[in-house]
Image (spheres, rainbow, N blue to C red):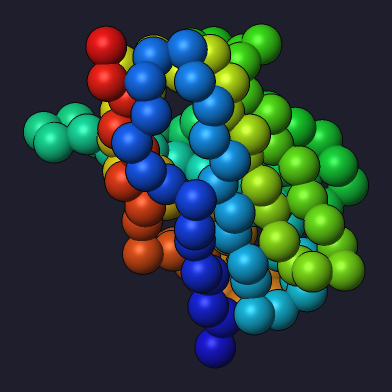
Length: 118
């Protein structure tokens, strides 16, 4: 069983910063990749950023240059540093772990709310 525990969401003014954390109960190297998705009411969940176990990162165009994903292999934790936040970044952010090879499935965190006020 894999658990993903998220933290770091909250309310921030436009232009501010937040850092999200996602702690996995298994080694990061057990997953093909880990990442962050976000979802707003009535819309599909969308990829924000991901990082493979080899360290390759990928970002949505809307966050390039503002967000940075990183990981701590010792703590099995993935971080999302969000800078220059905009009201349109407001969403529930979900941590994701692709365990399809070792575990046969993808895992999701419980979600953390990020609200950016204008």
